[in-house]
Length: 222
Image 1 (tube, helix red, strand yellow):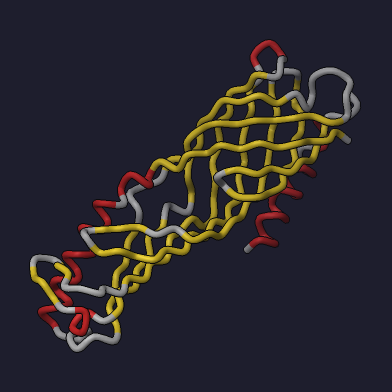
Image 2 (cartoon, helix red, strand yellow):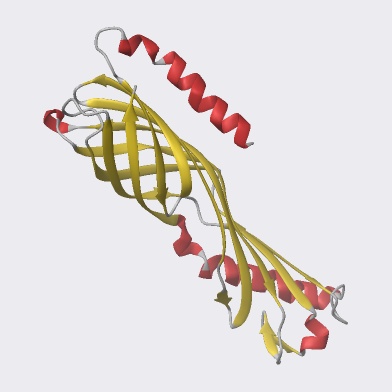
């Protein structure tokens, strides 16, 4: 998947190559770090007010969460590509950015109750529950809006700096929850309560529809 995303960004840069015929150094590459992960980008200046930008970002980290009174150990996995249009009013470094991320943003969950827990509307012992395994996934395509600063194409310097703050928008997270290793893991009544628990986790996770984007980076024109 990563190769496809990088290839897509490179292909986009080739399609934008006619933009560079009228002036020198209208292309740039860069490196970023922020909430989307660690990544790279390519950008092309269409005119003094508009820059088209493609990016690839990835990150994996641990994140523990409590949903419906059950404590889960979480492993967040992010791998996204993106295509954006950055509008620079007046041709300065300040920008308004719009576009979309596409790819994977998900949280894998493992819950191992150590005491009695309520699943759905029924209380169960740890031995009855066993291990709870879950996954919460954001939409594969996430529209983005943001503001920032990018002096890549201002002045005659080769190196530039960029900062970006915004929000990527997803549908309500898609949540799946299963149980294993418990005495009731395959019991029909327990599975019905687990389905109710899954719906409660989905409701608790709905705020993750709004993924905050805070990013810093350096760029170089070529």
